[in-house]
Structure formats: C-alpha cells, structure tokens
Length: 122
Image (tube, rainbow, N blue to C red; front, side, top):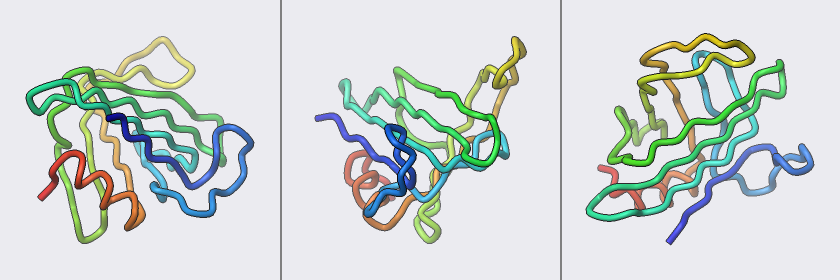
C-alpha cells in the first residue's frame, strides 16, 4: 500500500490545498511550501521513500529518496516534525554535493497520524 502526503501548495497548479498533510519542509535550511512525500512498504520494516520539494519564495527545488528507509533520524510528536539526515545531497542548481544534510518535514495533525500509522512512530 503506497501512501502519498502532500501540501500545503499543489505542484500541479500552485494552488493552496484545502486539507494538506504537510505544513512545510526545511531542506538544508530552505523553507519549501510545495511537498509530496510518497512512502511504500517493501518488506521487513523497509520502505521506499520519495520526497519532492519546492520553495515558492526562491528558486530552490529538488527531491531525495531512500530505497532502504527504516525510520526518520528524529521525530517530535509534540511539533509533528520528522527529520531525515541525507547522507549525500546534490546542492540545488550546482554540480556540488554535501554530506549529512538535514531535512525536516512538518506535518499537519492529519498527516502526522497517517505517517505514524504507516511507519509505526512512537
């Protein structure tokens, strides 16, 4: 079963979503308002995770994925924030890469409940 969480602005038409799952993401310190996070179970607690993001405030967009995802590096149920440390990250619009880039995804209550049920978050 594949789960797709989106928000708060649509990739398709840049319209604000009425009932988003994601409030925003912070990718390497840049706030991104367009988000689409897909999670698909593979087997034995492993997931395929794919996250597309785009900032509406500056030219910054991209994606990351992990084909052997087990769990986020940090989770904070009180603020509904999940953090992933990306081991290798291509810097937007350059040929450079960075290591250990922090990616925070902040969820709405509905989005957090869905994420928690899929990944069995504590």
